[in-house]
Image (cartoon, rainbow, N blue to C red; front, side):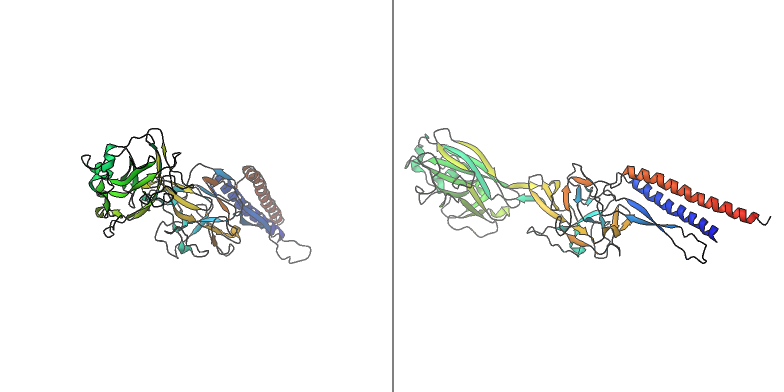
Length: 477
């Protein structure tokens, strides 16, 4: 009967508009939710077969949810170094489980990049989901696979060892007084044994007192700091020539081979040109401090290595550290910043640069535009931990919504593909930013008005159909 179909059409209008109201309510409630994508109910008519000519049966309306998941929200700067936003296509991969993830554990996808560090050091967003990424290997590479979730793990910025950077280069800026008088002890000076400057540093009653000494630190492989001194003694043989020694203080830090005094690392001559610059070529004697002043490198063997040979050194056995090569930059090469000069002014150490860093703990976290998450240590060392993977879909609007402003795969979305940020169609990353909700309040409030009117109109259909049925029933009276 047409009147019944009209009433049922009105009921379908009430149901569809109720769903529309629910979607609008969700949108308005999430206007400030990071990474939220607005939903809408799209209406379509329902057509019934017409049984007889000249009669019409109403089919009504039905509503279908449409999620605007692929719509890009505005990026907003937050100032938090752990916040990340995606500019373009793709989703963060997250999990509701922190560790021991297997292939069967669920992974979800979200645009909500307001991450923070929890008590265990994991990066989690406001919904409690753990950010997934490819761990950075010891050699700095990433084992990425576009379809294998098991290559990723929850990113933890504290479950890493303390950072140490052994010294490999020391830059020295200093001046040796060209007017320095030759010491009376210079005649008895010998670079090895009891008359060395290293011997004087260990016991002032022995050895030869230097004219000038400067000290610096050397960081070993486990973050230990060792004092190393460089001493100079004006030579009587040439006005532009100085005896020089590099030695450890205390001497017990070093085991020296034959030809070296206890604690001594290297000994020899340093020469300058007539204008006070370091001489690296024509005037360099065979017994200079370094055979090549343009490449002044010393090698200290590991503590566990065998006893050093003649002229060689190693770290003392009790230290238990690795060997290392250290460049002492006195300014002999144009691409270096060190500067050792001989000018007519007081001998002075102007500065020492050391690229080593002692033991440091995690003090902060940074994210770059390639998705690399790095731990910043208190000693200034920066270490890459993991790289964020971006998951893309052929139809992101087909993803299935789950609680926590996240999504899971569905038949409509297609399978995922994991990519690096900015590659293969994946969006780029913006650090210290989040993606705002795509809800437009003015549009939602307008939708509220039209939905309310449509709901009222549907109720009028039911009321009118009811009145017509009542009239039909009253015919019998």
